[in-house]
Amino acid sequence: MSLFFMIVLGLIMGLVFGVALEKSRVMEPGVLVGQFQFRNFIMLKMFLSATATGLVVLAVLNGVFDVPLHPKAAAWGPVVIGGLILGIGIALAGACPGTALAQIGAGYKDAWAIVGGGILGAMVYGYNIDWFKSVLDFGEAGKITFADLVPLPFWALALLAAAGLIALMVVLERLSPSAIENGRCDVPMEGADDDRLGHQVQGQPAE
Image (tube, rainbow, N blue to C red; front, side, top):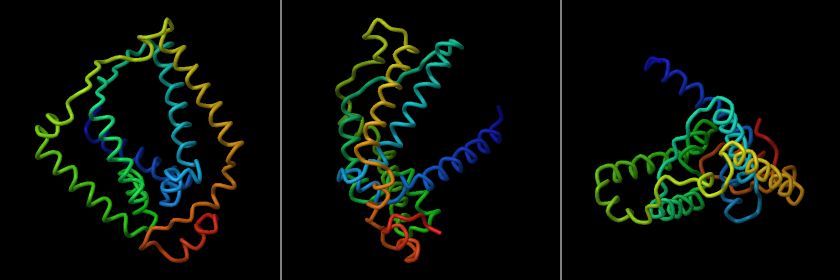
């Protein structure tokens, strides 16, 4: 597989991902902030559906085609501290690294500052990676998975987990229907087109 093909494939996948973010409204600041405020669960439903789909695909690849798994080593330091920093950043900015790019495509001008801040943060981390590793390098647990802890093959455990996530999504949808949640996306980001924001605040799709 050539480098050119990989670049083209990455661009196509990024385009599809960006369109999905925009159409699902997960990239909107009001959706992201609303999730952290527990006002709507569009973001959580999207992530749960993606996780369930990924589990089914991995179950088929591993169980039918015997594709080996390559789990990353668990490390509580980077996961907990990094997760807290990322979560605080998303709640304050109304965007994450992926959704900020989709927001730029949708016309949110402030998203440029978020992308610039992300690049600056990556540079600071890259030039000081040894120091960050020395601070965050604790809680190493090795390459362990739930399949190592229960007497079930990975594919069976993955399908059970996917079923559980789907059941959770059904419960969430009954408790907080998406049709109602769409009307709660009312935390617009400065710099976006006024007409577009007017539609979003009312919970209607942008024209």
